[in-house]
Length: 228
Image (cartoon, rainbow, N blue to C red; front, side, top):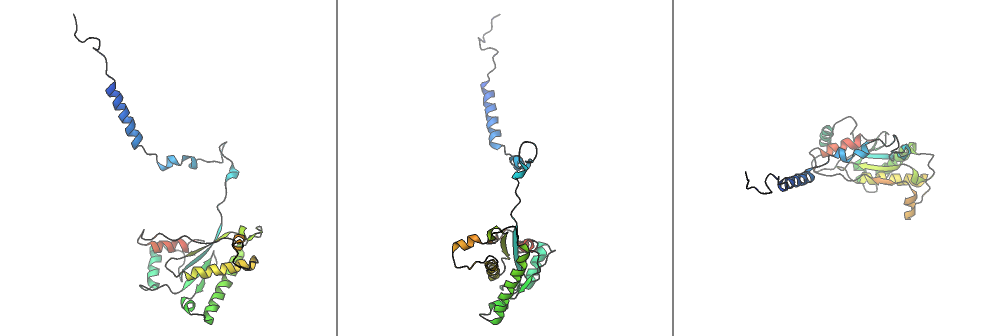
């Protein structure tokens, strides 16, 4: 009995199937995303085991001496919202914060009176500035590393000034630190850039991003007050 299908009778057309496979492959290639853990798998694996690494490659993070400048009375042990409430009590709307604490590392704070500093060329202002210099001299002395012969090898100093306060407090702290470096390192500060290169690094903490949260000032105080 003859059939009219010819030679193509019973053959499977694979073209549509190949097209579907290619479309699926393209779909998965375009939509698949690797998670952050998969991307960072090399950094998560230990490098001091087996033949994959050398334990001597590890380096300790650089140590710094933090100088913190916050409103008077801001002590450790509170949450960001509580710091914000304290700030609202001592700061009148549209007014600057009056008094400040300067704190070097874990030392006791030094009270700096804003009204005294606002007086122009008064004896009280000069005494306040001298007191800041004496405090910085005494508080930085324990952080001296005798094994480091050059001043630039000493631990960096970072000044953290609460952004809700006048910048003059940070500048006063900076001047006191530079005066300390001049005495210890016998630097005359003539304006030669080489003098700064020979001295230890003194940096200001980077500015804060604003309008990212309702209690951002409280969060900033929390971070500055509770650091060492």
